[in-house]
Length: 117
Image (cartoon, rainbow, N blue to C red; front, top):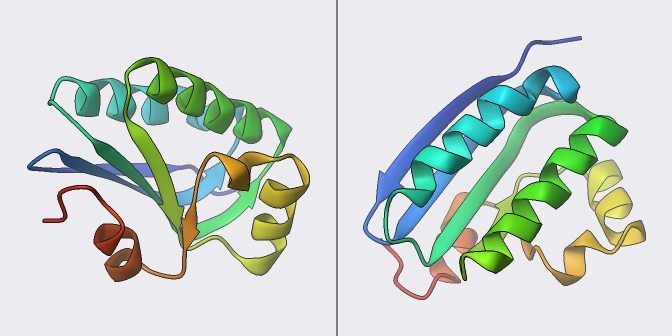
């Protein structure tokens, strides 16, 4: 298992959370901390970068669902890019793609934002 590395990039009304490693219960504190720091800004969009994520288990999916729920309460649009085809299929099977649009890359994800940087 690869320990998660989380990097937060803040821009005008947009935040990107870059994830590198495995999204498991061990990643929760780092991911939630980055998410909470992002919410201190007046965000419209938050983009999750999964391009360097190798593994997401059920606890990791739970973290993502929690972020989605909190984003909806805060009126922040959650988006993602970089999911492998395998995890795109899992996101689709559990219904996450209905609520978290997935894009092929960062450029496409940014272009979809209300106020792209």
